[in-house]
Image 1 (cartoon, one colour):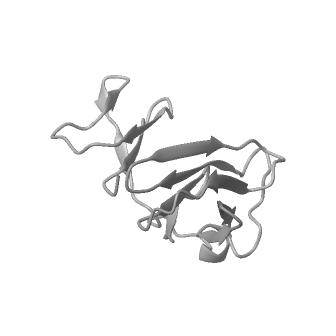
Image 2 (cartoon, rainbow, N blue to C red):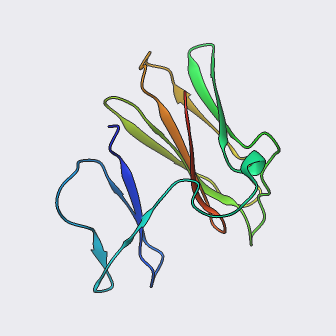
Length: 126
């Protein structure tokens, strides 16, 4: 699952996840979608890079060393965990705490992604 890629339609904002590498780019609204590259938007890393820990049989992902705002106009839309053989996504809403908990299956290659509606995709490896 190390090759997971996220895409967004530049017209309607639909988002897609590509879990297996192939030669095609997802298409939406008649145009190729934009691949989201983690950390490519200029923004405060302390509010966007997920802080990931293993705690009592779970993997806990908190967005940022400094809590990220969760306002209608600026919030974390999802937190996703990708490991060797799984991908899990937790959607968040304005007003919610920017935290997601996942079962810890002991995987060694774990990457946590988060998507801010204003500052794009960010990731951290555990």
